[in-house]
Image (cartoon, rainbow, N blue to C red; front, side, top):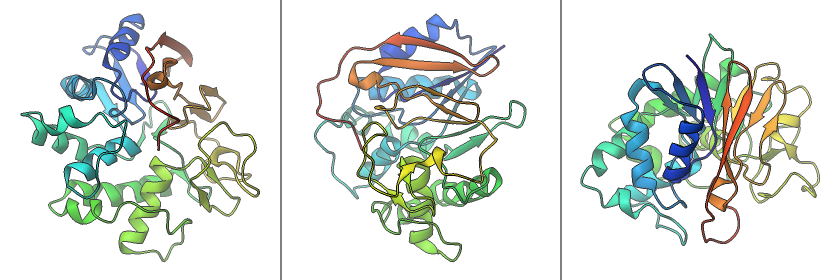
Length: 277
């Protein structure tokens, strides 16, 4: 019985199945965590989503920015961009069931038994794990409810760029979602920066990787995240990055939580330009 955390799949279904074969994953015995970005940019978004859903309780996923992009596009509040591979899902006969399942997923997952938490992108330095879970639950409740369109319509945007306790409404939800699904860099005060998407060198002055902010409130709890393909696998005591750029032709990575062993398989290159949003 084992638990595996897997980095951004992004529609690379064949690579996912190869990696699960490598670790001899058994859904009747094991559990697999997905760090989000299940879909988009890869060639088999529909197959990937259907398969993960078929795993039932053996799979736990958090939402990534590409998963939310699918939901926003499906609601008609944004267009598909060059390189998107969401058409198969949007045209599928089971589209509504797939989108409904996606809306039920978490922004952040915590497992008291193992002590690990998981989020797609990161946590702002002011947020303890308990605070972040409470804020994630606020957004999840709206996304799962009957008025989820009211959540999706104003979701896109970079402002506000920092957390304040008095934030309310759309601004409050946007900051929560941007931190947990889009952030890579922030300042010591928690201001987010969204233009730097490559490796953590030559960063804008005053900004650093979210996990390097001195005194961040979530320090000490191991946080598993993805989203940063150019960073690659990062293994530290309390931060584990697992986006190793499968959709860009590199590798798909899995971490076995029980012993922190990393497993990888190669991925075929996808023709696109630059790293994704």
